[in-house]
Image 1 (cartoon, rainbow, N blue to C red):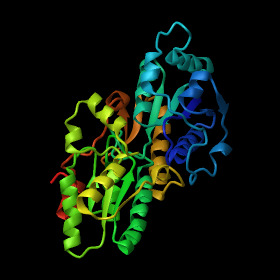
Image 2 (spheres, rainbow, N blue to C red; image 1 turned 60 degrees about the vertical axis):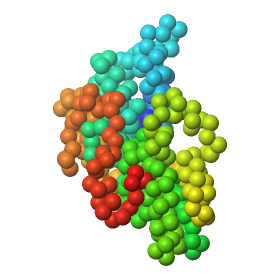
Image 3 (cartoon, rainbow, N blue to C red; image 1 turned 30 degrees about the vertical axis):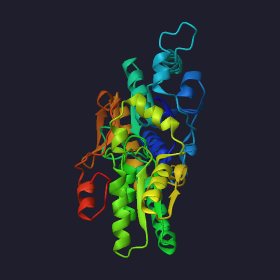
Image 4 (cartoon, helix red, strand yellow; image 1 turned 180 degrees about the horizontal axis):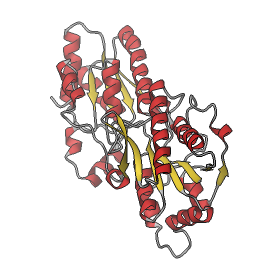
Length: 359
């Protein structure tokens, strides 16, 4: 059996354990398996850049962050727009031709939302595809959790933990910006885990006055500091009412490097309290995968190997209600898993007195 494998999109912890899970299970259940690793994501599949892997390549990578195959962002819109191009740039056709020329039996794809849209497109072209869900954002539809998420939560939470002491020492307000352009799972979990006083998510537009009130109320209670955990895609209620083009133009014209700096400046002006910003950025993607991600990635990888041997293609190995199950790609592609406003963590957070900026 000949298997192709690639990792696409932003890197995260758990990619190597997941590939290891697929490979070890396949080698164990079908010793005749040959695995080819495409370098730098879909780009490798498009250009025919790959190398034959051996069991040794997958040894010792359980605890290793990043991806041994390399990755790249190949936007779905660009791939889709290239279809039917007469100048030879039809990326879909090139990927299909590479697959056919190599006589692959299946293509294993590890990636996030954009990656899954392309994976489904390739499946529709007749390729045997099995995918695994990776992203620190935990926003892939059809799975309870993605690998990379818990490791990123651990890092973001540690940042909040460390900020507590300096915030208390100096009596400051701190705005900590976590990754998450469109969804706020990372900020929600890190904010709860780190004991943030305010958590701002893209799904719950905030009002500056509500955030300022928390700062002033805490000061009145004799509390020296306030910790605010903000998703990079958080927006005010006024911004949420803008049309998409108007919103994008507004953000492009913003004099601050991110929403956190804007919020900090506005809060400092409104409350008179010294306010600082901390952005862990790509730290959240890097480093070794935590044990929870190693276990999750290994389970999903082994399950994907089973689907391949069963001839069950066009599916993602997902975690559904605590069990690993095959999820049809047609149900996954193009859908984001947003944080529901009635999520138990939000309800319980409000019971604890955490503000989400909406009231």
